[in-house]
Length: 188
Image (cartoon, rainbow, N blue to C red; front, side, top):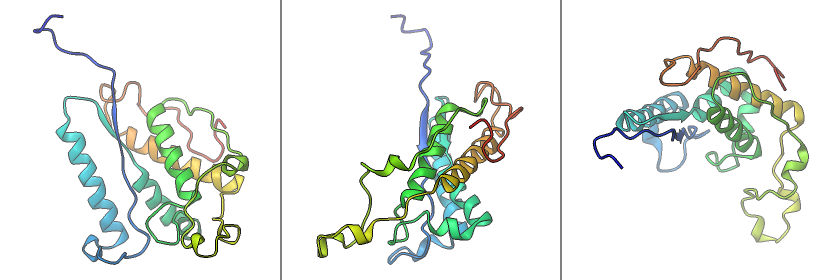
């Protein structure tokens, strides 16, 4: 091993930008509005990315995806959260998974993505107070329909394309934003 040779790596650090809380949570009043909270979280993750320079670090823009859903479909945005207003519901978990998937893949041609409601059959879920009567059945969270899941996947792809376009080709190999179709069900 040559100590003077620069180290090269293909490793990429990906920070998952957490979304802002749906409502003010006790003890968190200082975080501000949903918009301000989202901006602060993004700025914090950007400072981590900047601190890791010259290593390759990126942000999986989950918070920005939540913001987009809030701006375009408030009813669906409310379903992104568990009843505690800050943990993700199955809808939110699906959106986070899609954002992370597309962040790992990059903004090249949109990779195929499949959804099946069967995904949730063996999944752990957040069901507050379910232990009180021992009956989880009446507290099962709502799971995304196929249409909702594909809409959330479209949002994730749109956000990935939007934020990867701000990078140079050197920072994100081939991510020039050209040819990407974030429309519903593109390349699905």
